[in-house]
Amino acid sequence: MEQYAIKGGNPLVGEVEIGGAKNAALPILAASVMTDETVYIENVPDVRDTNVLLSAMQSIGVMVKRNERHKIALNASNISNLIVDDDNIKKIRASYYLIGALLGKYKHAEVALPGGCDIGCRAIDQHIKGFKALGAEVRIEHGLIKTKAERLVGSHIYMDVVSVGATINIMMAATMAEGTTIIENSAKEPHVVDLANFLNSMGANIKGAGTDIIRVKGVSKLHSTDYAIIPDQIEAGTFMFAAAITKGDVTVKNVIPKHLESITAKLLEIGCEVEEADDCIRVVASKPLQHTHVKTLPYPGFPTDMQPQIAVALALSKGTSIVTESIFENRFKYVDELIRMGANIKVEGNTAIIDGVDKYTGASISAPDLRAGAALVMAALAAEGYTMVDDIKYIERGYEDFHLKLHSLGAQIELVESERDFQRFKLKTG
Ligand code: UD1
View: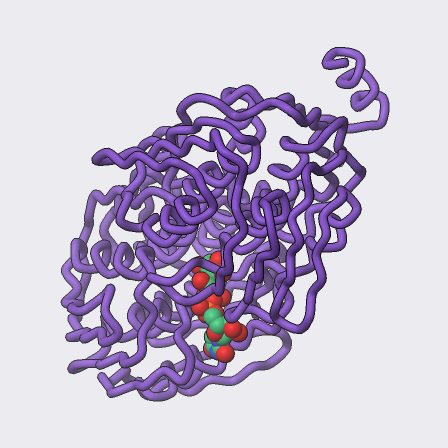
């Protein structure tokens, strides 16, 4: 099994190109089954989650052609099966986007219940509520969500919680319903807007994405499109915090600075310098980091997917910081690993109280989930000595070429497969 061998201590310096947003790519790929015409999608990140979704789509008859590493053509005119029960699909959260997409187009879908990162109870009641409001029958049987409708009819749906997944799923199904659907208290994340733009480019009629009321006027048919996915807000934020944590100087390129405002604000608060240009942001950490407080919130608040990364920075900052996780209840699992590297953190319920320390020291650690895994790698890059990071399969779910990008910024990091490889790495870097 592959692991990362890391020797800490080098500040990260240089420029890094940010890829397409995983969380936009997943619903956009799924939504491409909603037309019989060929859809061309650019800037698709080559990460495990998108590849698992693509292979599940192939298993039901979608033709997938990767023209270049990040450019994919999809044609769903020969779908042979509306049951998606591929073994791998259970491992990713976004499998459920195929329900909204297939239900919208075919009025029938059966998809294995979603998995994804173990960061708390990830209910799907709001998705089900939305499908039912549109007139679908929904049952959960034998590990599958089964949905069927004679016809889908537009409806007024008030979401009890702000949910990215439910907003996206309802928006997809409503796109091909009869009449108008109003989704109130919808999620406003950039990837929700990106999916709406993608569907509109295929002939859908969606207004208000990016606000908390989305209006979808159903259409009977969608057509071909050529669409480029937005840059990944979380990948960009991760590298921005990597600059802070390693006391470096990193420019993230191909980003939309507006999507990164809450992240930029916190970097300024803890004492980094941040320079913005049209499509890049430079983060310089030349002074000691200062403590702050942060609470995760739906967009435009500070993203829960950046919570472990900011905590790793705060644990190296002067003073006491408080991190409150308000989206997922089980998102502090990395704290034990960080404590083993020397951090001083106490978790009480959904709050972490962090007393800054001067340094981390390398240790043998495991990535508990995707974002926490990336954050622990960053801690290792700042740590004194060597770290071995296990379970990097989680990190590979959402970061393309993570270690290569870090290496290009001056990190001493290598993919290894055994203790012997690790010893060789130590000799080489010692
Ligand atoms: C998506 C992202 C994930 C991110 C999260 C919050 C993808 C593939 N994943 O996950 O990276 O951390 O948004 O920005 O895009 N909830 C319910 N009932 C539901 C649905 C959600 O109670 O039917 C709750 C969840 O338990 C959670 C909160 O709503 O507490 C937010 O979840 P949601 O926005 O749906 O997250 P995901 O779409 O799963």
